[in-house]
Image (cartoon, rainbow, N blue to C red; front, side, top):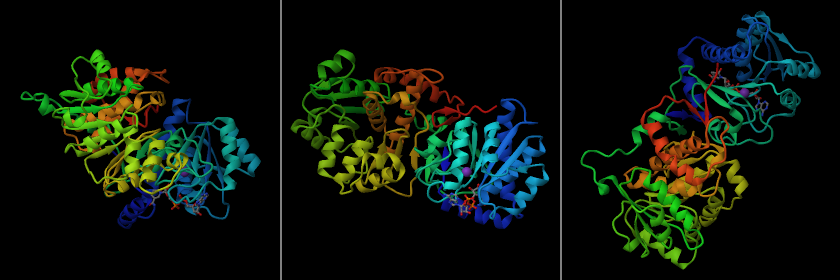
Amino acid sequence: MRYAHTVEQVRAAEGELRQLLPEGTLMQRAAAGLAATCAELLRASGRIYGSRVVLLVGSGDNGADTLFAGARLAARGARVGAVLLDQDRVHRAALTAFRAAGGVLTGDQREGCAEIARADLVLDGIVGIGGRGGLRAGALPYLRAVERAGVPVVAVDLPSGVDADTGEVAGDAVRAAVTVTFGTHKPGLLVDPGAEYAGVVRLVPIGIAVPSAAVEALQHADVAALLPRPSGESDKYRRGVVGIAAGSARYPGAAVLAVSSALHAGAGAVRYTGSAAAEVVRAHPEVLVSDQGPAQAGRVQAWVVGPGLSDGEEAQRTLDQALDAAVPLLLDADALRLLARRGPVPRPDLLLTPHAGEAVALLAGAGVQATREQVEASRLPYARRLAELYGCTVLLKGSTTLVAGPDPAVPVRVNPTGTPWLATAGSGDVLSGLAGSLLAAGLAPLDAGSVAAYLHGLAGRTASGAAEGAPITASEVAAALPAAWRDVARGAETVLSLGKQLRIG
Ligand SMILES: NC(=O)C1=CN([C@@H]2O[C@H](COP(=O)(O)OP(=O)(O)OC[C@H]3O[C@@H](n4cnc5c(N)ncnc54)[C@H](O)[C@@H]3O)[C@@H](O)[C@H]2O)[C@@H](O)CC1
Ligand SMILES: [K+]
């Protein structure tokens, strides 16, 4: 598991440890890890000796880490220049160490920008977890110089301008190739839009012990441990039967896609009810179909309701019947809009899978007004809010998928797999069939949602192919699920970092 903690948690843990260690120990650990990653990057593109590095140094300890790391690089022969963003407020000991190692201060702004244009690497030590609000004006000319020159940036602890706790970005922020973060991940490094700015994230342990995380990301081994596996005595009921109420005359394909992925996701059987029965059986003869609605469809261990369902009276009846059934229930697409009209129903075994637009409707259903843009910009707070308002688990789809449970003490799961190519018609139908199947197999809503998102992202990447990938269809994603499952079950040692593989040096 990859854990992320809030600024408050980090500060509390650091405070305790600091009392037990000689002054400056934590900062030296941070600087050593930071310098090691920078050295690796410089070596990978040439050599450290003679390479040009520019430090952007803010007034706090984030700037101090950066100066100490710069001193270490200068001691190895790099030509390191530092831009002091606040001449009057700089960590004195760090500056002394930097100069003693051969580091130089760049002159005025023009000279600083000229240095950046020649640099092999820039370190962003403007602000770390002490940053408040957007970046201040003084830093902007240097950011523009970095962008113009296309120099890779290593962000120190987190990209300046990204809110550490939420991933929100107010105005400008540094775009890093690599972020070297200290002690633990910060939520803003794992959740978009912040995650987009962080690049590849590398954690440097500095010895702090942090309590229960605010955010966590499953890794291969966690998912492997959660995957349902049939035993010698398994039959289809013990493995779980998932019921799917989806599709309509207008959208029969949504039913076929949800059923298709459910069949590949661990349940022993799939029952389908709805008006697309003929299409479903044609595509998947193993499915048990009816058109009588959930109440008459036979025994299931979980229901999935919504993909392509439409929102008429028939759809409303379908939702009512599924809500009356005493089994875990996943609501997606049209079922979410129907639920929004009715407002929260207290069901802890409910899993809602909205995208930002559907989240807006659900929020409105609970009396909270928000726009799609606001939800996209503040994904973490809104996912938590929705889970709290509806008293159930919410999987918020999007650039980083989040799964939040109703208990605020339980960490929100952020999905580390995926590819932008998954933003394609029918992709959500595949995700809901997959998560419903895992619910039927006995996984709790938080596990079912996060394992489904993980496999869905992995299957998307498998279907899309290596490197930057290529366009994919939702059917191809469903077809790639067994490969993703095998990859996870094999326990392949893949270090995942938000859709990218960590490949430094
Ligand atoms: N707390 C600790 O024990 C450790 C902290 N470390 C480093 O210390 C950092 C936190 O240091 P600080 O608490 O000094 O805080 P920061 O260095 O993150 O930022 C605070 C300083 O930046 C200024 N500032 C705030 N918002 C700004 C903005 N939007 N634009 C420009 N300047 C802004 C403030 O006036 C203040 O001087 C961590 O991110 C990490 O890099 C590491 O050395 C490891 C140990
Ligand atoms: K920073």
